[in-house]
Image (cartoon, rainbow, N blue to C red; front, top):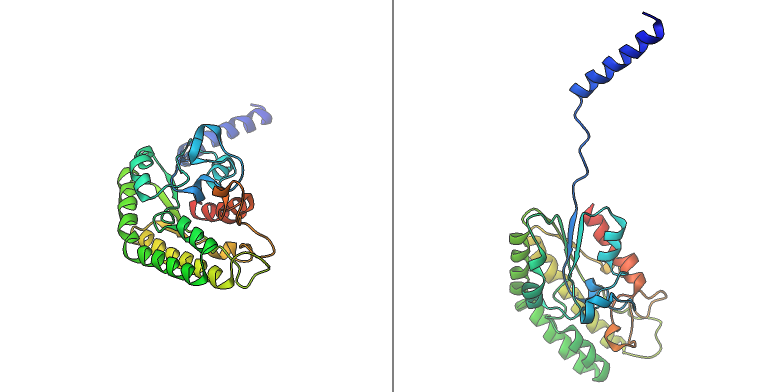
Length: 264
């Protein structure tokens, strides 16, 4: 037998041996991603919305859509909706979860605590009105919101028992003191920020109790609040409902890295 043929036969034999002793490369696991939550997850504030999403104002510039576009997902179900409260997640969103769901993201709780009314009161009322309203919101967050979050998180785990669940928090709204020469006083800005801090504490605690992954975005947004040198949040805007929500940079540079780090 010629040497060249001997080498070819030997190579074929070696390949056959290796195929028997080495495990086959595993196929990438299917990623079935469901994005739940409120306007901070739907992408309100980015200025461009998926027409079929109607008043939910889901955006392709939102962090869930950006994450799904950057990864090889088998399925992406986007049901986060502007204005959603915990009850809306239970009645209109968790039905999208299934045993096959592998990744869930959610931001929820701000609307339950009255975020919109806090901003309205602080915009048009006195400093003391603002402080009083934020104190009411903080009391609600500490005393009522935990039970509401527990119900939502229990439903998520029950419907998607094997999923990685990532709970994302809310940023502080304002840099205090900041570069804004007009608008809310520093007293009002600090009061609004303190409500964000309480929300973060409550939400992280309830997420941790369920062994979900909580991502605090306050650090990421530090230096990018309203009245900073580089805003990742809208101030009072038109349309009005986009006010006090992450803009495209906030979604892409603030929220997206948080989800990416948690989802792996």
